[in-house]
Structures are given as C-alpha cells and as structure tokens.
Image (cartoon, rainbow, N blue to C red; front, side):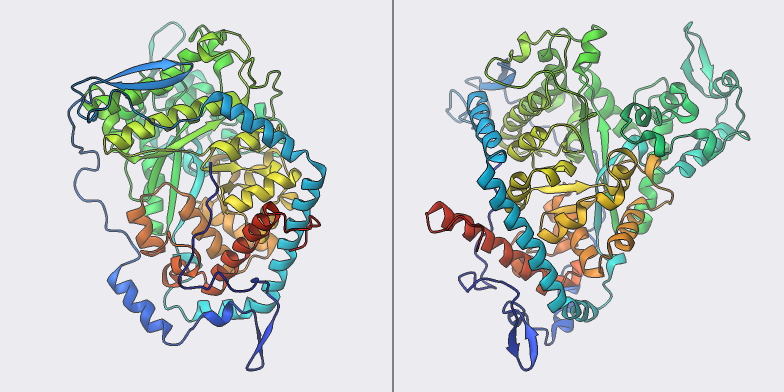
Length: 626
C-alpha cells in the first residue's frame, strides 16, 4: 500500500510556515494562522445554495437493483500459478487488443518477503521507536493546544450551518457482521413472531435425516415461545467472554443450541436462509428509517466448496437483499486447518480456488454465474476473520510451501492468508477493470489481539483494517498508519467484552493524534442493547471520552470516507469535492465538520510528511524536533 500522500490544495498555501497552533494576534483574538484563511461571512446562504444544487441524500435506487447487463465472454484462460491466478487472453479475446499477455502489476512473493523483513527491522529499531514515540506525543499535545485555542470557534462555525447537526450527518457502521446485526431483543421478538406465524414450516432435518418443523425443533429442546426471554437466549457477551474467544463464539448459538443458529442465522440451510433474510431486512428497514445511518454487513464465504458463491448470490437475489443504506462485505474465516481435518480440502490451494475461481470465472464470462454477476455489484470488499490471539507456530518466509504444497494439518500464519488473498485480489481487480466491472478492496480484521506482525501485513496490504488495538504497542507502525492515513474501524464496546477494558482503549488517543479512525459496532447481538447500535456506540464514546460534537462529526465523516459506498453516493453525503485534500474537500453543510478542524488536520499531516522528507535529505537532526 502506498501512503495516501496529500496533494497540493489551491485553497490553502501549503508552502506557508508550519501549521503549529501557536496563536497570532488578529484584532485581539488568538487564532492560529490557518484559521485566518477561513472566512465565515455569508457562509450560511452559500451553503444553502449548494445543498439545493446537490441534495445531501443520494437519489433512491429505482427499478430492479439486481438487473445487470451481460457482456460477451472475454475468452481468457485462467490458471493458478504459485497460488496466484494468471489470466491469459486467447487470440479472439474481446479485451486482448493485440496483447498476448496482460502486463498487470501484482505483488511478487519475493518482493513482499523482502519488504516485510524491512518492516520487521523498522518496528524494532531503537532510535526509530524513540523518534516515532516523540512525534506521536507531539501530535497529542499539539491537538490539545488546538482544542484550547479553537474549540469555541469550531462550535460557533457549526452553529452557523443551517439544519445540520450530529444526528443528521451521514455515518457508516464500517465493521458489522450480518449474523449478529440485530440486537438481542430484536432477535427474540423475531423468533417468537416466526414461531407464532410459521410453526409448521419444515426448517431442518434431525440426525436420522427426518424433516422437522419449527414447532418440532422447539419441542425437541423442551421450549415454548412463552419460555423464551433475553436471558434464556444467552447471546450477550459478559465478563466470562473476556480473553475467551471460544466462549464468545458460543454466544452465536441462541439458547446454546447450534440448531437455532442454523435455522435463524444462516444463508445456506434447509429453508434457503429465509428467516435470516427476513430479520436482516428488518434491520435494513430500521437503517432506512433513520435516514443517516448506514452499514456494511459482513457475509461469510468459507472456502469449503466451489458452489458457496452461487448459493450466497442466490440467497441475496431471491430474497431481494438490497437497501440504499447497506453495502455487503465478504468475510473469509481463516479455518483451513478445520477443513483439512474434516477432509473438505486437501491443500491450501483448494481453499484459495474455492474462494477465487468463481470470481474469475464470472468476470471472464458473466453468464457462467448470472446471479453472482448481479450480486457482486453490491459487494465493496473482503475481510479476513478469526481469533487473532491463536498462537502461530509458523511464519511466512522463503521456505514456506506454496499453496498447492501446503498439505499440512496446521493453519497457515496470518500473513500467509493475507498475502495470497491480496495477490489474487489485485489480479481480479485488474481483470474486472478491463471488463468495466466493479472492483474490491481488502479490509481485514487486524491487530485486535495476537502478534503485532499482523499489523505489518495490514499496513502493507490493506486499504483499511478493523480494530487495530495492538498499534498502541508499536509506535513505529502507529506513526506509519498516521502518515499513510490507513483507515481503522474501531469497536470499543466489542473490545471491552473481549480483549481490552473500555478506559484503556486507544481510540481517543488515536483520534487526537490524527489517525483515520471510525466507530463501528462489530456485533450488536452480543454487545448492544438498543435498536440503534451505532448511535449507542457514539453516545457511550462521547460520554466516557468527552468527545465534542465536532469530534463526533469528524469520526462520522471518516466512516463515510473509509466505507465502500460508491463515490456518486459519497458526493451527496460529503460534497462533490470530497476527494480533494484539506478544506477544499470539505463541505461543512453536509459533514458539519468546521473548516478550522479540517485545515488543522491537513496542515499537521503535511508538516509531518515534511519532517520525514527533511530527514530523508539529511537535514533533520534525528532528535524528534520539527
């Protein structure tokens, strides 16, 4: 991943002196120099005109969202080499354009290992650790000084914006799993309602292969709908799940019964995921009713068989799983060792093929998987999930077997999974771009627990990550994440129940320093109580860490920027110029983030990049001073 280095901004003079918030006198008022650039005169009328020209809500989708065009086949040959797909055009290929091969750049394993070793050396280098720690401390103190000088100015700027406040700025839940996307009371009501209205539905088979109705399932557990309560469901995390990921996973089974999870919370079951689709559609209706809350739900592809993609796409299209407030992410659990032990796969290459071959086939010929072709238009990226605290006995190095040779019963290390996922995604995105199709990003769980080397892989390969708690232990990586502005979707309520007490969570520290953080819910079923779990997350964070309205609006803006919603939608939510750097990319009438705050963040980042560049040229003294 190359850092997202700021470009020049015509609105601000980036060649001016350092943007340190040291006050200058301006008519008796103490203002940092960049605040003087922000004119508030007549702003309200200009903002109103801009909103009328470009409304904050994107036009609702009309017609069939899953109706797509089917381009002719590309006539390309697909073959895995060393665990990575190669795409070779036939002479009559519609995208060959005279080329005998595609010169698509993709990461070479040898280059990746060399860069990874360099990163390992960097994060353990003593002088560099001291330098990064000092810079991060400087950023924290600089932000505190900015707040002391400008908090009232930021509040006044927000009050001048008509109609906009924290409640009606768009925010995205950038990390939430669909199977736990509802709260426990919602699931309880849904189970009771389904039992009342559909108790005679055949929902599964028993151990002997006999069909069972929903009523028979409840009878086999000695349960009636009247017996059910939130406490009996027992899906909420508690003090017993702290550092016990196994107990947390068991919370996915209502009443401790895997059969109920199979019936109500799976897309691929005896009833084709009908109940799960209904409850998720109710959650989507709640999001639509809120207008300004959006989510990126994770759905699972396990890599156990080649037909998983087609089954998932059929579920989504059959049940019309679409909302303007929702995008889908695909999570891939790192469970090769389980599949190998159960003889579902023979090598890691089988796992990779099950994940990626259908995607390449549908890109090559959309009619080969028509439902998958339609569904992929609503998928924004891929996630890699599992318990990061598991010990890893192996490391990815030059002696590691290639995927076709990895027939060991042991699970590959985190970096092995991430590298081969990323390498195949790069080729897939190039192929889909040639075909004029949507592309995907990699946004894995990373740094929640376990070895800090996971964060090295995340920094090198990911567009953004989920959690990132371990960054607090590695100042070099934390500073690099700041410089490159890689997104971090943080879930402090989830962390509080699993790995880190709420008051020790580094989110406020990351935010103060300027890292690109957003708030997310992770698993509302396990961690939240209300029907608006994202607002619950924001409200608790604001109370505990004393976030201002400006802080929360900035985090909400970050969440939209990190999300996989199309740019056309983000133009409505954030403004037509949202991809520009600095205040030129901010529209306070939509984001409710004052230009003063955006200017501070931009100038501070530019100053840090200048500091690094001066050091590279030998002009820095190496003592951490600017």
